[in-house]
Amino acid sequence: MSEQSIGVGLIGCGTVGSGVVELLQEQSERYARRLGCRLELRRVLVRPQDVDYKTERVPRNVLVTDPEAFFATESMPILVELGGGRGAISQFVRRALDMGKHVVTANKALLAAEGAELFALARQRGVSIGFEASCAGGIPLITAINFGLMANRIQALYGILNGTCNYILSQMTSKNAPYATALAEAQTRGFAEADPTLDVGGGDSAHKLAIIASLAFGCQVSDEAIPCTGIDTLDLADVRFGAELGYEMKLLGMAERIDEGNGAPGLSLSVQPGLSLSVQPCFIHREEPLAQVHGSFNAIAIFGHAVGQTVYVGRGAGKEPTASAVVSDVLNIAAGWYPQAFGKMHIWPDQQKPPRLFDPRQVQARYYLRFNALDRPGVMGAIATALGDAGISLSGIIQHESCAGEFVPLVMTTHEARQGPLNDALAKLKQLDFIDGEPVVIRVVEMPPG
Ligand code: NDP
Ligand code: HSE
Image 1: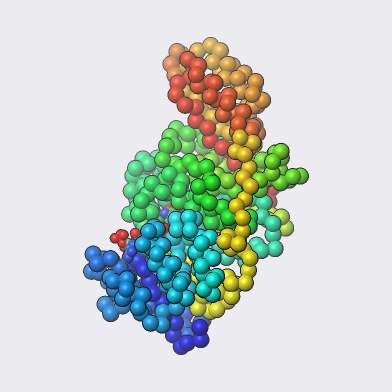
Image 2: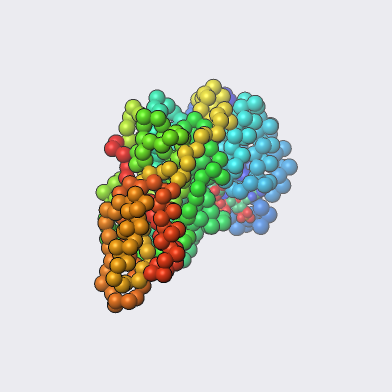
């Protein structure tokens, strides 16, 4: 690409798309100086109903509503996909790659499901896919994993990967905001997905974890292989009890390598080595860097064998932060180095096999438990004994004063315990007449020494 200007096409002009249009317009001189040529937004494909509504910054002669007119546009070697979802959007991305266009996308749902095929297609056609914006918004996380940490064997990563959930948890924790109000605010601010159940149900974090775990561990991780619990069933009572114990609640995406001779951080050696993957609400001690990350910010702690711990923090969602990552990809493609690296390096998931997954029952960690238990003689002892019989040792207990004979929250934390025996013990306990409903189980994550 040595032209005086490089044509860019954009599909979708919503929250992120409009941010990209603004950056390309406002920073055009600076980008031209850095690149030695101009980026020219040649066509923007929008829905007919969006022509007068979301696109006031786009010149009329650039806007189209017909995909055929969009794809017929000449001299447009870079296509930015910001429509979201799959279906027609997947077909557009494939068509662009087939036509020999580089693609830049923020679409983690598409990449988590079809990334390996799309990467293979791109490589066949001699083009690249930029997807920095797909994980952790404005943080250059993909670049860090693929290039900055290349010398390392990654042992584990822990990430706050969803800005909407972190925003909701922060509002609930610090302002006592009701869950629904905090979610509505996140939607208004443009953090949430078109379907916010993807955010709060943990699916969006699982998409992102599938992408970054594939890159970090050199394997092809499917989001369907990731056990996933969101924040939509959380009880504010647990956020408060956690705070009493010195913990912050965070929705974490976690990937931990468990090797022979190498218990991954927070876990111990198992008979069958493998990769442990999950998305779940967790408690982190408030002194840990990740616990101090609030609002729509994301943060990822990555442990490499040579470098130790590295932590990446920044705005994980929203118009400008995400547009920053998208436009950086466009610039890196236009500069020429990124397509070369994409074509040459064996770091993309289409070139790898699925990982051997670690048995979740063997995962060893600390846990927070909350029972709704009858306040009568012997109950606390019976629970502690049942857990003790399963080899689970308690590290803390909270019961606030109440009227004798009522059901009360009884909170316990454990020392390291295996998930399987813990689940078995809880299944037995919940059958007993002095326990009401399902016990709450939340993992307490202890980061390895950096
Ligand atoms: P929006 O819903 O705000 O914008 C998407 C726009 O694209 C909508 O106007 C939509 O129209 C339009 N669109 C969808 N399909 C088509 C199509 N086939 N032809 C023309 N227009 C189409 O979403 P966002 O900007 O928030 O997100 C875009 C992408 O970026 C998604 O993949 C999202 O996951 C990702 N992302 C978003 C972040 C954020 O903070 N918002 C952060 C990181 C990634 P309509 O509404 O009518 O369908
Ligand atoms: N809905 C996503 C979030 C957008 O809240 O993190 C960024 O990927």
